[in-house]
Image 1: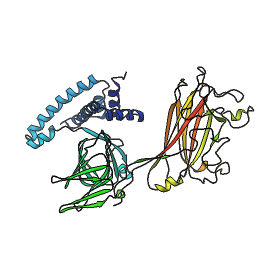
Image 2: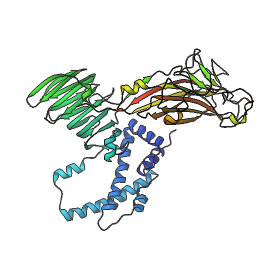
Image 3: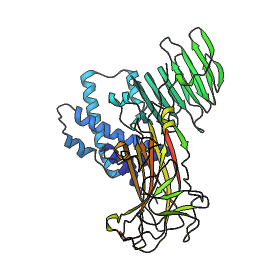
Image 4: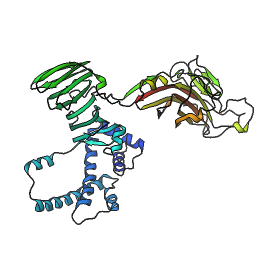
Length: 485
């Protein structure tokens, strides 16, 4: 059963700016999946904001950081309720004081104040220009209201999974999960199944999504253009409706309209995932597994002692008919050599990414590797740790180690994740790791391994009782790309 206080703890950590990456992901998933969670989040963060405002703006009050921290921390709902009541009373007194000072507000001001702001989206990708501006925080949650972007790209991910990629300079108003206003600038939107009807208002008409990917621009000359990249949209103007399909575009001008061919490169390109087949990632029977150090070519596995097997010791391959079994943490003879008594059995292969880098020279590329691991249960001393790593290099694929002794010096970046596996041979456990690929890197090294985390056995002993990897896959994630004006 789900811990009823967990959501409260996540919000508290969010307000204290103390969320760990996995906790932030957990909070985001809860907000994406639950309207009641979004409402609770809005209410509690509003309390937090009002409290800080009250402490820092009341006449004659000099709130210290310690006071703000003391009042904003609340790990249980009852504390938030007490705090909210106290704040409401304080704000009422403050509002009364302001009325006596400046007079009663006008009716439009009262109506505006009565309209609640709701959280609608979170910020996804930010280009370098946006990050440097300091105007938006990473993964910041956004309320209804105006949003202005001076330059660069800003990705908005709505809670109904609509994605809008703004390119500055642009100004929009977020009204609801189903409606936004584009004052000027341009964006590309992707509307998934279930969110059809997403509407964009412009100075010259409305664009109503019918399940699609499309772009809208309000140009400096006052013209409005709608371009459809996938699916269809409906453009409405003065009661007249027009449907546009894939590869079609329409320009609205104060004096009329004109058909155009869709121009995808004129609009910012949404982030995308590019699949790339990892050679022999399934370790089927034709897989070449070398016993050595670095691979001697592209697309083959090499490393410590390992071999491909079929069903083994009660464990079935995760997919297909074969899998890789790690056997020892060394690649030399079985003679006892203490100086090579390592802790990890590793297999690795080089991937040439020259073509994908050349196809996307200016985009941020992230490589993600996923592998599935399993092991036998040989008692409490069974080693249980697996590793998955990626390393990026700048080097020549035709001059690989061991002949290229300078490859390690050319390493651009590396990352490794670990998995503490369970003792159930019937379950394969996935592990993923990502790396941002440096612009000059043209080689990736994918590494899978089994660690002796319980006991480092000597060479003459059986080091790994039955440890396996299967279904290693590779994906590339390309960041958004600016449109060409």
